[in-house]
Length: 167
Image (cartoon, rainbow, N blue to C red; front, side, top):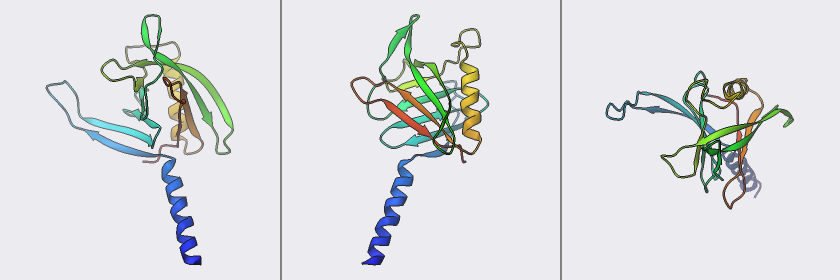
């Protein structure tokens, strides 16, 4: 009975750890027809919530993907997207810094994708690059985590806790 109980507790711990999410490196093959270059993509996925995608920590760009339902897309200055809340936390779950940032809706997808704008310094939202730099530096520090909260249409908030980058 004790062995069965110990196995059940270990299985619960493994499942709980897996529910926290994980990082993956995905290689994208070049596609001449689409003009797509080969490269690596880094994805943090948390089951039943969604994912955080970056094309490398030197590009200062990322995408959010909602698993369950659509983001609550708004229009600001003629551009579809949404303001998201970003929190940088330490290992004690204490909020170190927070800020709001605008993410654009990706028009070639359903309302389940938001991403930073990649239209050059003069066309990107004010302060975007600096905010993304802070997020990436925090993720690469090896401690704490980054939390992103975004409203979803007719559903609970998208609330993703991104653990430190560990690939």
